[in-house]
Amino acid sequence: MVEDLVIAIDGPAASGKGTLGRRLAAYYGLHHLDTGLTYRAVAKALLDAGDPLDDEKSAERAAHGLDFTQFDRAALSQHVVGEAASKVAVMRPVRQALLEKQREFARRPPGAVLDGRDIGTVVCPDADVKLYVTAGAAVRAERRWREIVEGGGAAEYDDILADVERRDARDMSRADSPLKPADDAHLLDTSEMDIETAFQAAIRLVDKALAGRNT
Ligand code: C5P
Image (cartoon, rainbow, N blue to C red; front, side, top):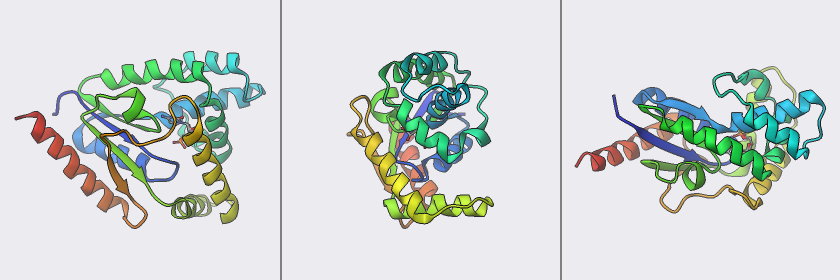
């Protein structure tokens, strides 16, 4: 087992970073945290309570009370929750509360893979390996649309594309911890790559970093 390895993965919605994170964690025997779920859980708490999504006090309370071992992935993966998450994610007190818990998670032996928007830049700036996973907006919207339709849901591609673009703009332009690649991140463009190819490319980068650590 590898000791205290931290892999940071950032990228926009539907770039493939979640699947990549899960597979890398399994491969290297590390913990895995999809930090998007933490923002989604805060948003869901507000939606369930009927609180407005700009209620900072309620959002901060929900963030502090969050249990990172209990995420209802099915409920949190709903499209409306993702939209709401990107709204609560602009609030500084929410980010501050989640940041501490995310860092705590990353410190647990034998190490962790964290994926999100600000992992390489803010949460784990000293990560052993940083990946920035991206793909064109049209490709990502197509993936989302396919996921929804194959899961039995109904969706219009144009609506999904508009949502993806709106969410990108919100995540990249916010003042606190905007989505951007860390200076030392490796870029992985998955527009024309399947998940297996992306996974193999990521393994090569991690193995190289590990070899460097051991010399
Ligand atoms: O990745 P996912 O789509 O689940 O993330 C939902 C929202 O949570 C993102 O659009 C973003 O606004 C926010 N988020 C964030 N920082 C992270 C992870 C997610 O701001 N590290």
